[in-house]
Amino acid sequence: MDRRSQSVTLQQATEASPTLARLVELGRDSVARLQSIMPLIPQALRPAVKAGPIEGSTWCLLLDNNATAAKMRQLLPSLEAHLRVKGWEIAAIRLKVQESRARRI
Image 1 (cartoon, helix red, strand yellow):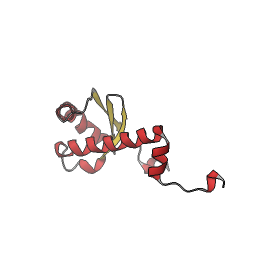
Image 2 (tube, helix red, strand yellow):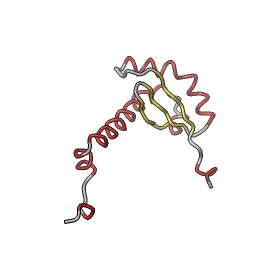
Image 3 (cartoon, one colour):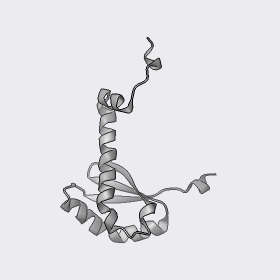
């Protein structure tokens, strides 16, 4: 039977690939970090903040707009300290504003 015609679940694929398993683990870790800091973010900004990639000891937050980024920059020291207290080894949080879909058209 041709391998391309066989369906596999995401779980089967991650179990078969250490690289994919690591990506899934990093994704879950990123979401857990975001959930941990969410109470520290003003409620009005929470929908504009998404979990981003983890690269070594740097974590990225994906933001909807520049206004959110400006406020989040002010919060970075307390967010980083909170994550360290919770046991995450973090050197820095990087902020990245996502280009809006409307601009891409």
